[in-house]
Image 1 (tube, helix red, strand yellow):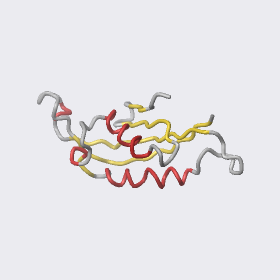
Image 2 (image 1 turned 120 degrees about the horizontal axis):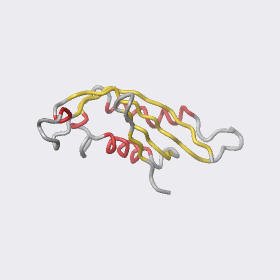
Image 3 (image 1 turned 60 degrees about the vertical axis):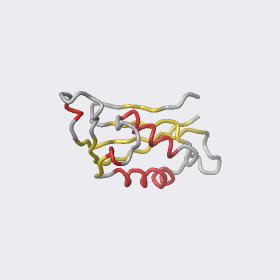
Length: 118
């Protein structure tokens, strides 16, 4: 079993209005998000790869474009945490590409990973 991944970046704003007003994330703020999409599987015999990186880009880039320079609270129908954003990506990619895991970084020092149970 092999895993390949491709990374994407976008800028977006969000707020977490369910938090107390005193919490800084209650207010509208922005992040430069990094999303890494992992695909796993066996090697395709005649290509010696799991998936062409361009196939990953073709599947993920429209989602990134939908979020880039937007307010995530106006797009996602759930609380705009990194956890829900990782699941949002996974649920839209599952079945299109062999996505096995999605990592969402809100900052360079934070990461949330969604990986469905196997």
